[in-house]
Length: 200
Image 1 (cartoon, rainbow, N blue to C red):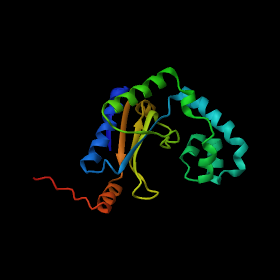
Image 2 (spheres, rainbow, N blue to C red):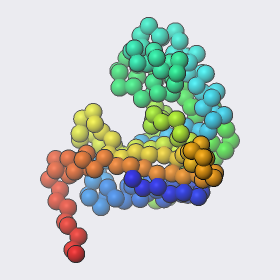
Image 3 (cartoon, rainbow, N blue to C red):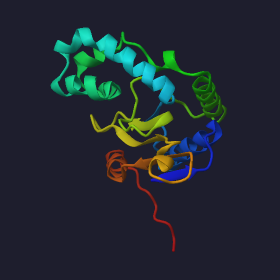
Image 4 (cartoon, rainbow, N blue to C red):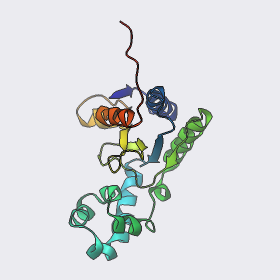
């Protein structure tokens, strides 16, 4: 994994995402990959969105899978991770977290998108991308491929401005990602791409 600490700026998010994109591009995979991007805002935004999502999904509770029924009461944002086609169809008409962004959330996300556009790094806004871990704030991202079936994420990460503080440390904003090396190697093998070994 790669991590950067000390700043909560959109520029730092851009640098980390650009690094991830560049690593995969060095393997000549840039035509086989897609950057999925979202902002899950901060606590104020997420708290309001969580309640709106619960309210929206309650009438559909009988149509939800058992795991999503449990998540509805514990962590409804995790339902956005679903691979169940019926649930995906229901969520298409649901509220979006972007409707609940604070001004700061909006500005941060808009600046990130502008920076990525300036670097010519293509991205898709994926409102269902939440990364499934409660410590993320604002930026979340995955780089995926459609070449490996359902195991499509090659790497993923996001911003975690309060994680260090929650673990007892000093307030230290950060962002990072982790990569699935086995999936990257599998994709390289499937595409018959040879990676030259560095000379000692």
